[in-house]
Image (cartoon, rainbow, N blue to C red; front, top):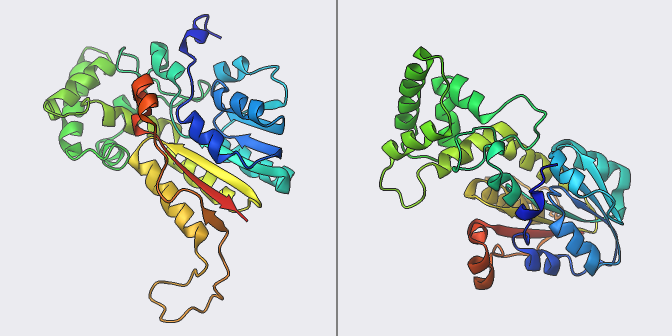
Length: 308
C-alpha cells in the first residue's frame, strides 16, 4: 500500500445523506458494494452498533486499508459477481445495500493509476490485476469501437471528429514506435472543443474509464440482482447522467404495480408487482457546505429505494 495513502483519504461524498437514508436500520447486514477506503462503512458502523457490513472492492489498496475493523468483513471482487452470491447466502438478513459508483479521491490523485489529467499515464483499472487498460483502448481499438465508446459512454457530440484526430495522431506515434498517452489525448480533445466550459478531456476520460471497468454493465447487473432483496434499502450514488438514468429508470420500474405492455388497453397482469417504493422523488445532492469543501461532490446524485 502506498505510503502517502492517508493523505488521500477524505470525507466521502454525500455522507450525511447516506447516514440519513439508512437511519431506519437497527441490526442486520449491510453490503457496501464499493468499499473504497471505508469512510461510508465506518460512519454507518458508528451510527448502528448492531449492524454488520460486508465491503466489496476490486482495489487491493482499499482492501488493505480496511483490515481489522470490527464488524466489517472485506471481499475482493467485482460487486457484479459478488452481490448476487451474497443475496443468495444471506437473504433476508441483508437490510441495506450501498453503492458509490465513482472513482475515489485516492485513485484520482494517484497519478500512477491513470485516472487524472495531471499525468500522462492512461491506466484507469480499478482492479490492477486485470489486463485491459485505457492505454490499450486508445491505442488499439478500431475506429468503430472508439466511436461507439466516445458516443455512448462519453456522450461526446463530435465523437467522429475526435476519433479521426486520435487515429491520425496514433499513426504518427506508431511511426516513431510510440503510443498515445494522456497528454496526447488532452491535446487532441482541446482541438475538438477548444471553447468547452468543461475540461475538454473530461468526457473522453469518462468514456475510457467506463469501458475499461465495464461500469454500466456492472451497474445494470447490480440493479437486476437487487430485485431479490426483501425488507431492505438500496442506495446508489452516481456521478454522471448515464448512471443516474439507469438508476432512475430501474427504481421507477421496481415501484410499478402494473407491468403490462404500454400498448395494452386493460391491465391483465394483476397489478400486484410492486417491489417497494422510491424513497427519493428527486436525487439527493451535495449541500452548499459540502460543495465548498469538496468540488468533486458537485455531480454526485443519491437515489434510494425501499424493498418490501
